[in-house]
Structure formats: structure tokens, C-alpha cells
Length: 282
Ligand SMILES: NC(=O)c1ccc[n+]([C@@H]2O[C@H](COP(=O)([O-])OP(=O)(O)OC[C@H]3O[C@@H](n4cnc5c(N)ncnc54)[C@H](OP(=O)(O)O)[C@@H]3O)[C@@H](O)[C@H]2O)c1
Image 1: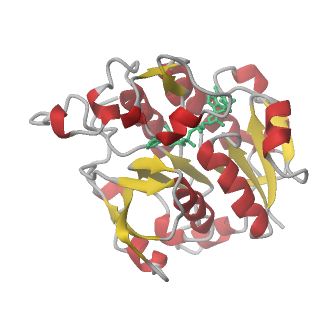
Image 2 (image 1 turned 30 degrees about the vertical axis):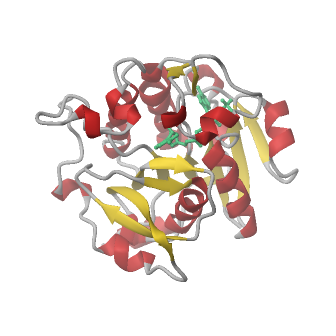
């Protein structure tokens, strides 16, 4: 039984990743800011570790003890300017239904925080048997799976028509450069040397995850996708070397699907060293 660390386990996607992992017989360790909140949301079998990725001193080596891979569902907290219900019902309805604001600093969470978590992962993540594949010249399965966002390279892109873009792209400046810092966080992951997969979902919904998925690269995609689907995808990626060292966008179609050949879809995507993933020069 492998232990997977879920960062952001109290979030909309994170809590679904946790239940999907448990249903697939993984052990789960959860990095959470508030253990009491996590206890109310997550199964009793989940090992809780309290920490804040913006505070490097809270990410002790113990966090990585026994952990063989990480799924990061962390995102800077967004809410309507007028506030939200305790269960964040307005946020989960979707950003297009309210005027949003960020609660914390996107630079600190999406960039500095991810840098802190990557540093500790690089030092203390327990080796996994997939590294054997690497020794044999094959792609390993990812050790770091991260949820980013469609649109991260669009703020400031020449020729972009903001009127036609999703709210997060249009409001990037007002939201503290949320997408700009997410892209910087992606860059940290791509440069880390850890085998990774970066998922850039379109607008997240609370709908059921039974729709056909569309994958693409180049960051031009618009649409929506359910949190349930993204959580399931994260867990499937743990065993799929075809997704390793790739960054891709994903959305869903209206039609429902009975089965998806995920291996084939991932194999058709380009590795990041063969496509331009980042709009920013470091
Ligand atoms: N909303 C959308 O339409 C949309 C579209 C594309 C991509 N995304 C991205 O997809 C990801 C998942 O979205 P979601 O709706 O599941 O987000 P969410 O419900 O807001 O969950 C975010 C998680 O990150 C945690 N977190 C925030 N700051 C942290 C910190 N400093 N240290 C440790 N944990 C921290 C939160 O913990 P607390 O519970 O303690 O706050 C929460 O568990 C996010 O990266 C989001 O930006 C969202």
C-alpha cells in the first residue's frame, strides 16, 4: 500500500482526491492548514499533517515520511468580495457568478509556497519503485501531480482579446496576478527534476464527472470540467508514465462517456521539453 500526500486536501478537488485514493486502496496523508476542519471533511483513516506551504518552517521532514508521491490541489483562496458561506457555496458555484477577490497573496501561495513544498519533496520524498523504470530508460510515473489552471500563459499575451477570455484571465491583475504566479509555480515544478504531471483545468464545476474529456496543449482552451473528474484524473495519473513530464489543458464535452482511453490521450501529448509551456522567462 503506497502512501500519497494530498496537499490542499480540504479543498473542492482535494477532498475528492482523498476519497478517490482511499477507494483505490492507497493510504493518504493530508497536508492541511486546519486539522479540525480536515477531521470534519475527511475519512478517519487519513493521516493529518498541519502545515502552511507559505511557512517553510511548518514543512518538516516528517511531512514526507513514508510518502511515495504528492498530489497538489492547493490554490490561493478566492472568494466573493461580499464574503461567502462557511461551506464556500458561492466560490463553488463558479467565479463568473460573483466579483472575486483573493484572500491571501498569490505570489506567496502559488509560487513561494510551491517552491517550499518542492524543496522538501526533493529532499525527503521516499523513493518509489517507478524509479527503476527510469534506470531502464523508460519514463517513470509522476511523483508530483499538480493542479494549475487553463489560462496561465494568457495574461499579457500579445493579441489576446480579454473580452473573450474567462474571468481569471480578465481579472488577473485585480486578483494579485493569480495566473501569473501559478505559471511561476509550474515553472518551479518543471525545473525541479522530480517526475511530474501538471494539469491545467478549465473552469471547475460541482457537476458529476461523467463527460467526455478533451486534452490539449498551448493554453488556448476554454470551457469547464468537473472537480470530480479532475480528482479521478489525478489518481489515475499516479500509475501512468504516459503523462510524465507533461503539462496539458483539459475540459469536458457535453456528451457523456462510458470509457476513455486515457493512456492513448496522454501518449498523444508532447513532453514539456518539446513544447513551449511557459510564457515567462525566468
Ligand atoms: N475555481 C476554478 O474554476 C478553477 C479553475 C481552474 C483551476 N483552478 C485551480 O484548481 C485548484 C483546485 O481548486 P479548488 O476549487 O479545489 O480550490 P479550493 O477549494 O479553494 O482548495 C484550495 C486548497 O488549497 C489549500 N491552501 C490554500 N492556501 C494554502 C496554504 N498556504 N498552505 C496549505 N494549503 C493551502 C486550501 O486550504 P484551506 O481549506 O485551509 O483554505 C484548500 O484545501 C486550485 O489551484 C485552483 O486555483 C480553479
